[in-house]
Length: 242
Image (cartoon, rainbow, N blue to C red):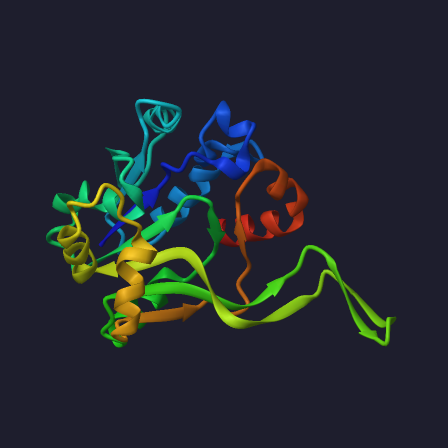
């Protein structure tokens, strides 16, 4: 199996920092964000190749330069971002994936020590076209209160909340049908993986949800978000490196 890392986003939420380096190169404890993702994917024996998609003619060139200086246990290849949406980008790695029954898709701003092997087994068990990592609990960044008649009866600082719906995270396992569906929309200038492909497949009952349970997850949207949640970031990184 191969893994694809989408690292071509413009990093709007990370500005002004992402005007100087891509989100994938956001520093965390002296190492770029993408370094933790690649190393984690590298730790799974069933993943034989890691494909990184980014704008290597622009700031994404920093990613390629970084990996030219490092050695990995897996083959790492680079594919130019097509600027055609999250689904459109996958058309450009189609040849690399044509002999695969499935592949991992990891949005680079996701940090989580998810058990990819169990997720892959779940994907096969459900005979689904796609499997999305999800969660049903979230630690809030603000305080909450129980209010009765304008009076606070109980205050909860940054509680862990039960979500009314499962939250979809940026870690997927996608099967051949997904690439086929993307090819059918190849005439579109922009193909959004969620809106144009997965939403329709979900109505056919072809998408499974792999709940990460008690595992921590964070959206590494910006240096500020990472600094604000430094303890959680350190915990996740420790889990990813163990």
